[in-house]
Image 1 (cartoon, rainbow over the protein chains, first blue to last red):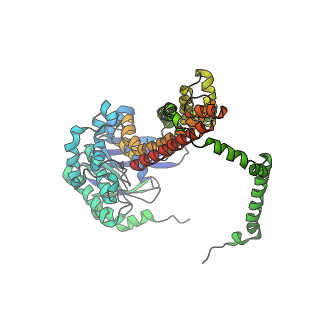
Image 2: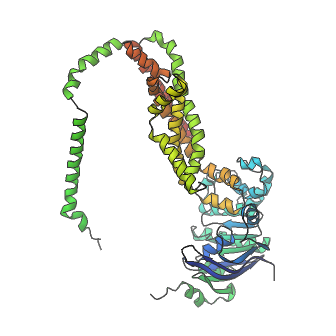
Image 3: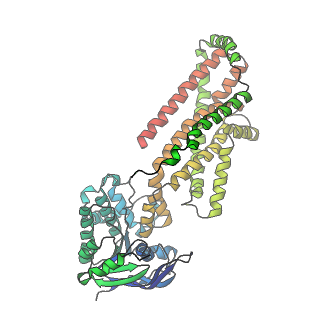
Amino acid sequence: MAEALIRTTGVGLRYPTGRLALEGIDLSVSAGELVVVLGPNGSGKSTLLRCIAGILRPTSGKIEVAGQEISSLVGRSLSNARMALGMIFQHPCLVRRRSVLANVLTGTLGRHRTLATALGKLPASEESQGLRCLDEVGLRNLARQRASTLSGGQAQRVSIARALAQRPRALLADEPVASLDPEAAQEIMRLLRRLSREDGLAVLCVLHQPEIACCYADRVVGLRDGRVMFDDQAANLPSCQVAALYERLAA
Amino acid sequence: MKPPVETLDSAGSRALPFFGALAFLVVLAQASIVVQARPQDLITGIHGMADILRRAWPPDIAKLPDMLWPAVETVDIGVFGTAFGVLFALPLAVLAARNTTPARPVYFLARGVVAFARAVPDLVWALVFVTAVGLGPFPGGLAITVHSVGMLGRLFAEVIEDMDMGPVEALTTTGASRVQIFSHAVVPGVLPSLLGIALYRLDENIRSSLVLGFVGAGGLGFQLLSAMNLFQYQTVSLLLLITFVLVMAAERMSAALRRYIG
């Protein structure tokens, strides 16, 4: 069994209002593995991802990323730990007025905390690295174009290139294909799978489409009401289990 | 099936436009009474106005060289006020925007400072500064600076609040520092809007720096006031001509620059 790059143990999150968003989540993603999290709206999928990314802080349990416990870190050490994790959002979140390459290079800022980068300069020494990351997503030819000119699928691939420029060991993707057409969605999923298989990244991806999940995932985790309902190999996932996940509770 | 539209057809709703129009007429009538509007005086006054126009023609072109320096002063009061206004408004706006302010009390303090600077008209600020630092263009520049901080601070804060937070969150998760997030995600996102607003302000400021001259803050306004007091109407018409050219030029230039940025 490969090394687990993301591991959560008994992670729970209770909002100040008293609502329990996550409860006792045990989950691990190994290098080279693509794990998809499914679940209805409000099941806690995105909340879990945001906890792992260190945006939200769980109220119980612990989260380890690449062997380092992330849930207790603050400030500079948290920023450093975040560099091991690349995050992809539903929307590409690019700076629209800057070039594609400039957007990718912002992924390397964590390694270059100099006065020049603080004042808005990009690390020029990383340019070839940035172009390599664009190669990975097949968009090197668009490097000098403005980000605002890209299609939705292209922009999402640029955001993946930005995450790769970070040199992460794991990728977190929060509904990365939710606002893309089916063709572009397949392309993004193929890319994520390739990155896990060939580059040995641990990929944890939240999705809304069970069909896509079963096509590309190694493992599928079902979340409902903040709890793990199942955690199975995608190949032998009974479809009734997935259906039960989305079944509405009789009022 | 059509949705019920009963409420729109009801008698009460149909009466609403009528009462609205009536209320408007009442407000207009009381305003006319309060300002003591006398149309007949406007008609009899036509002779006086025609007389002034006759005496103001032609503009005293010989005085043009003397007026160049005051014109430069007027423009520079606007430029000075806008530049320093932007300089002080930027940090205040960051503190006065809900999504970038470090703490609630700081937010309210910054909002308060900006609101106060805006609530007091620039003419009043000019009176205050003339008393403080004496006559001349400097109090005019100060007055426009303070008033600009009030206007720009609020507009800048609105731009920052409406900003797309996506890139900020994305850069946070890459491990970038707070300063880097500011310079690489916040600044590129808001800069074009901020520049547009500042250029529009420059146009407005050049116009209001003219008026500030009336209370002793230098520039063309001061010349205009002196010429009026001395009944030199030909000089007045020259000054109005210069003003017209300046204001139009400032407006056009600011609009062209804004188009270039956008």
